[in-house]
Image (cartoon, rainbow, N blue to C red; front, side, top):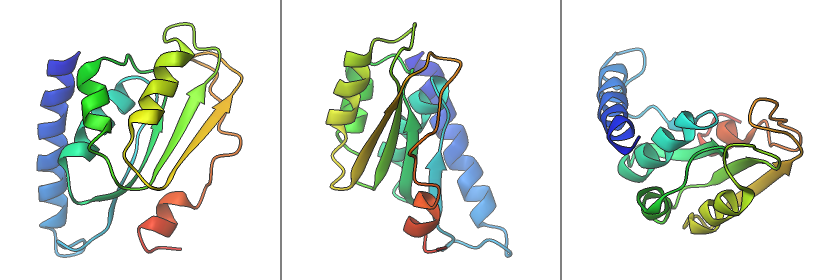
Length: 137
């Protein structure tokens, strides 16, 4: 999975380059990451660690956590919201908690709710989080 995520990081960085080259967006447009569960988080953590244009990120648990993901999380200093499905049948919650602990962000919040991998509840998540950190609030 790591090589797929690494390939996706390069593709997302090229996408950001192309979007910010458009005159209606421009190079100073704020960038946030709002990924999904599993692969969205596996890619997003690596992307956020590598991409200085990302000013805030939302990740969801349910991603397999290995040392490369933990190391990338330790490089993330932007504000983070982390959603953890408490009853995920594919990823144990201790891995999700270890991942949350690894984020180097001074501002990070954990949102743990009952539910399995497919029935993630976004209860308690700050809907204005990205807008606020991207100067859009």
